[in-house]
Image (cartoon, rainbow, N blue to C red; front, side, top):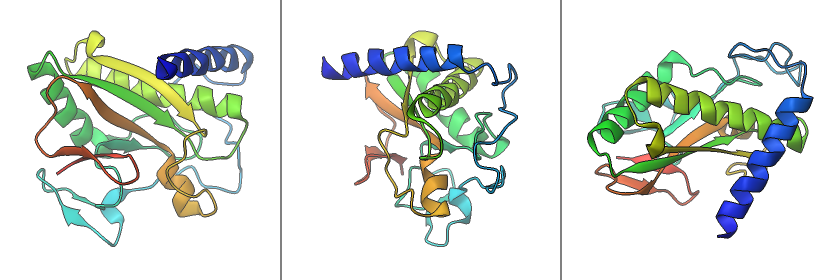
Length: 192
């Protein structure tokens, strides 16, 4: 019950923040970065992490980080093509398992206000949700929420930690889950 109240509160704040943010573009990218010193190409790429493990789809992803997540550049919410395999594998699974459902959680680093980050996290979650629906997933199987910068998994003290916090996690909540699906010690979704 508390999670539902929190979700409703976060969604309400996101809507308020979206309504008050007249500077946001109607396209799938924000044109003004919050922090001009960071490059918008500063996106965490788990495939380039030095400590890697091979998972079932033969992608190299760090075992300490979410393999069922989509990462974003600074102040961005467009799903990058490099995450097509994550979207495709989840969409295929959900489309063939109608009882399965996911919560898509948008996250941000700590740059910017709480309100702005709640809205940005929601746009990231909605972008991943839209991608899944575009691949044939029933809209009723997906709940999209924003954590903004309120539930960080990595320290924002470094560029690497902030990059790892700019992500959307695809978390299975009910029904059958993919083989090898679990949450790691950080609470991030992993599919091995």
